[in-house]
Length: 218
Image 1: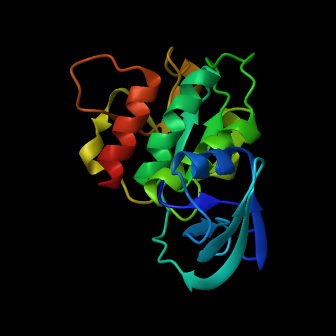
Image 2: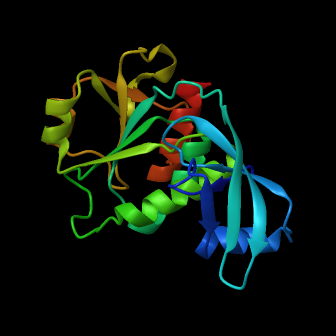
């Protein structure tokens, strides 16, 4: 773990509890040690000294604040909603790759009974950032359908079978990866531009998403 997260990081005194305290105990930290704590909001790193460790938490005092270089995370990708467990397992990889925004869309062939848990997804992303050192978390937006996606974003292009070679994907386009069942005829008509991944195999939706981000970001 590169640093610890606390939304109150920056205050003179701080108490780490719950999951953060458990991580601290795993590291066998002791009073007098200094740790990096961040709030993932202001681009800063706060160095705290551990004053006391009790059964329920660790009391910290702020030593100093420093700025952290944060690269721009401008890449945005749209993904049709699939099973929530699949989405949650994919979040750390996307966050670690530096995706700036993930737009989750209840596409025509998405399972409409899937219920997403924003708080759980945020916790997953915070843990991912702590592990990889990212001083922010990927933003997540949830849209009710493909029509709303088309209204909010211009230049949306499908990642679909039979599309153009993804090597010519434009920098101002937003890739839209479909659900396991693919896109509906209506969606293919609405988003006329499409690209295909250079794979001889049929990819699962989450595999196609990771492959698309890796191809377009690196």
